[in-house]
Image (cartoon, rainbow, N blue to C red; front, side, top):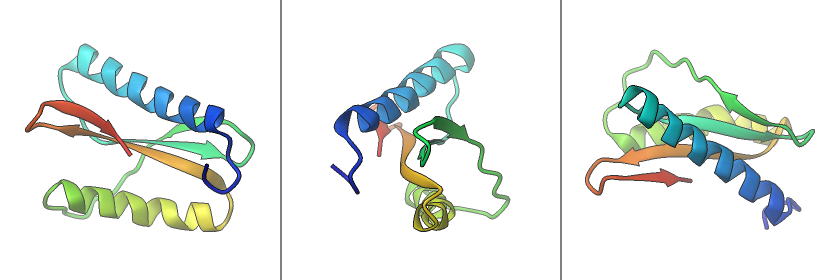
Length: 96
């Protein structure tokens, strides 16, 4: 359990993220990282991140998304976040 968040809410966050990723791949056949937040009021929200900075490699993308989310967590706007990635080497979808 993270910061007093119950497992049911975390499961709902991860499920929403995973279902959105699957729907995206089924609809478009393409994928890009998705971000979902569990907001302080309990609402799960998909977040659009517009970042025009160049990134190289999957880890750089994750690092940048974490930089965007960290102040939101510190300010208690969100309680948790899920980042969905496509691991092409497997192929597999990963929710972090």
